[in-house]
Length: 312
Image 1: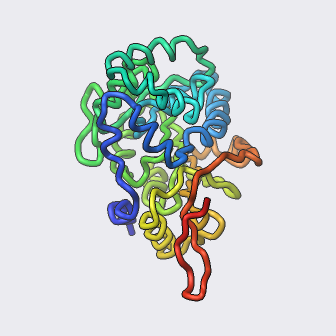
Image 2: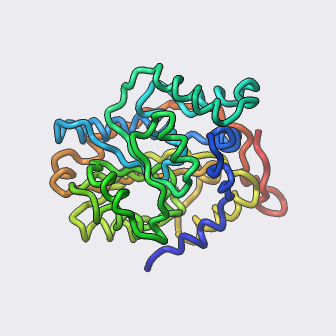
Image 3: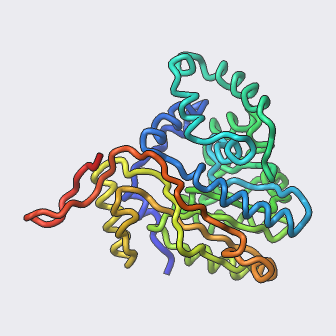
């Protein structure tokens, strides 16, 4: 049975407004205040997977970032930069005071000044026209497509851009997009791409894995490690998300119960590629990647049972 993603999404905070602006300052401010870190914690793992893909084909892969927003994944993968560092850049009062047009010009020069140390070229797909416009204007994405493939068809121009994708990745859009979007993407790609997905544990992946299997792709889930996305915004998001996990039979102890969204790493690709280099052989997750985290919502036992508390 297909998971009801729309119901699960109602348990999460809504941030639609930060994706509809002409530059990413609000994006970094709002998500940064919640210790959003998935681009940074995913980067070394994605780098290992892209290296394995490049080794298998001897070609620098083209990566399609689904739900790319302002191109932040491209920024942290192509340049020696981090989400945290960029957040501080945009938080400076001098940067907050300028117009979007001026910021785009500064950012174009800023990114062009860094050496491109990435293992791939990036293109993007997002429903936000302003975000795509920014990401291409500053040079983070070579090309971008504005489309909601859950509701509409891919344009001929979009299909042309996506045709060369070797890798499709997402670090947070599963749940907002489903197998509908990925089926349309796979319909137009010339190759059978590798699909890298960081998926919040509250979103079942079965329907996507089944769709990929029909197209000759096998799906592997990395065991023994999860990846922090961000803190819960408030007590309501915390409690509702834990309730959803409990309904799905997923134990949140030591993970979401500590006040943090956690994502699984899932890789789908042709069976021959998976046999040649299993996911567990490709990826090494370093321990001790401690990061300072702000106050979190947790459960505390008391005379009246478990209560929600904000832990410093």
